[in-house]
Image (cartoon, rainbow, N blue to C red):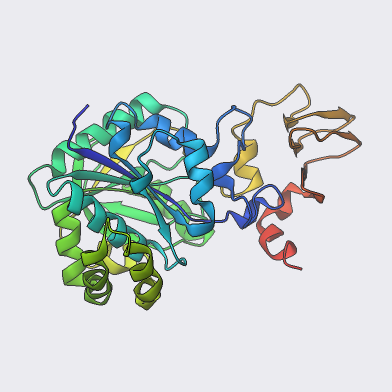
Length: 348
C-alpha cells in the first residue's frame, strides 16, 4: 500500500432504473442491492483498502447524502466527504475533488471511481489498479480501466485500444458512445474494444493541468473556490460558484481531447448494476431461476428477481421472468424484458 495513493469515490447518482429500491431519497449506492450485507458504496471502499489507507479516501456526493456517507464509511475523515451543491456531471465533480486532494497532497496519485458498480474478482481488479498507479506516478499519463466485454452490450460506452495486451498499459485510440446492437457486435468481434467503466487513474497535478488546458471554464470556477478550501467559507464559496461550472462529463471535457490517455484492460467480472436484469445476474438463483433478496415466498414462479426490504414480506404465485421490487410503500411488478422502461414508468 502506497501512502501517496488517494481514492476518490463519486457517489452522487440516483440510480433511477432500479426504482423503487433506488430513489432520489436513498440512491442505489447506499443500498445492499445484492443481499451481500454491504451497500455498493461500502463494497467500493472495501476493494480499495489494499491500495490506499482509509484516511486517503474521498467521497464526492450530493449535500443531502453526506450524513449517509458518514454513517456507512465512518473511518473516512469528515473533511474528505465533499458535498456538491448540485450535480454538474463528472468533470466539475472531479475538478473539485482533485483541487482538494492537491491542496492536501500535491504529489498524490489518484484513482477516481464510481460508487455503484460491482466487482466480483477484487484480487484481479486491485492488481490492475496498482499497475495503473505505477504507470501514472511521475508521468503525465492518464490511465482508464477498460473492461473486457462479455457480450455485445449497447448500454455502455466503449474504449478502443491500440493493442490487445492484457493488463498492460496501452494507448487509447478513441472513445465511442453507446452503440446500437449491430455496432456492438462488431466491437466484440474486433477484440480491441472495451467497456468504459468510468474508472480513471492519474497524478493529481496531471489532471489539474489537463482540466486547465481542455476545460478552462471549469478550472476558472475552481480558481474562485480554491482559496476557501478547508476553511469555514468553503460551503459558501461552493454555493455561490459551483453552479457556474459547465455541465459536462470528464469523458467529453478531457478524455476525448487529450493525447495522453492510456488504458489497462481487466476482466474482473464487473457490472454497473444499472438495471434489474444486471442485478439478477449477480444474485444466486434457486432451482427455478428466481433471484431473491429479502423475505419472499414464491410458488410456481420462474426466472424472476424479487427485492424486499428488511421488515417487508411478499408471497408470489405464477409469475414468469418478472421483476418484483418493494420499498417504502412503492411496488414495482413488471416483465424483465421491460426493465429499460422503468426509469420512465417511475415518473409520476
